[in-house]
Image (tube, rainbow, N blue to C red):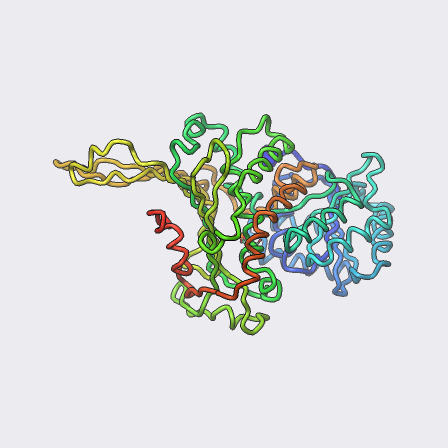
Length: 501
Ligand code: BG6
């Protein structure tokens, strides 16, 4: 992960992208590849073999990707790099459910090795940019033609799998089992794209490279923690998937729990993927499962109605494309949970995420306990608790809010901020979040990827909620452009707290 910044070229590979004609490649993967290439982080023999259902010749596909790059690659140097890469892109059309396809893939890779002017690597990374139902089929097909054999470590053979990884605990376990019967854990790279975000990675640096925060990072000093991932977008063209999934499955066992585990984990022994994974897994295991009888009080769901966002009227969820009539899918979820260990005893964590909310913002807020003395109350002044805000997007940064004296003859308190913005200090160029993910995978670094146990621990925590919701049809609503259903506010007001954004 950290090497990405120090410009060491990644190990050579052929990136075989199943589903290359989909949105993911043109919007995120290909721009990320071009961003890496423009910083000399790709090996000179880096090659792409794309596989999709659509019929394209390699030449036509190269032309399509070059056109897409004009729209989706933001950085001018990266745009330029896409032209250099063009001749190293190959395309094969085929049906993923056809067992014969995998022999064709092998054959095509063999042919590429014979290409007179283009050396390619024997390291293959298979990126599954496909609907979840295909994951097992693809892995089985590749295993069948021995494309997953690492020949005792001589060549890397890795698969990269997008979320959702399963749709509940049982299916996630079954998928892990099926994949692990075909390859070993080190060959599987399960993506949570939030871990590719700069500020998310910075959480580790922030917590463990600064001596001043760790001593107060516990129940003695922290009152509570809020983690919000709010989106203004609706379900867009993903209605068919989203209506099956809902906000809980879509965001909680993965993105929100990843963020939570980075906040609550203990310091790892080293910065190795293994040490960090071990601490994150321990952290997830310490989160108390919410008992069935407490779910109604601790977990709030909601679905958006029509409303106004940024001055524009938007449709309600029921009127979005591909949504079942009277759908009971939640587009918002807020929950309160606790971590049962020494450090976090009795500290509530409030997590929330939703679509069509008032503003797009992902933020972690740590509220510290109030100052012990009420010196200022006697003066009619209120010393508000300190807040540490970690901004994940759209602006990446960190700020610390504290009280200061308002200038003037009498003593009044005002809240001020010390703010660090990534952009101001490091002049970050536009990134997709996939750069680090791809780079690490090329180098076989598992730091930002999910191990079997993280996936299963995540699903184990949300499974009781899924079970409880299946029994009930109660679905609170909220207006698009709001902060979610009022019940979500009550989740905090009952504890004399409030959402801080
Ligand atoms: C995805 C979810 O994993 O994350 C989407 O499936 C969500 O529903 C997205 O919109 C949010 O990620 P980002 O990077 O756009 O904030």
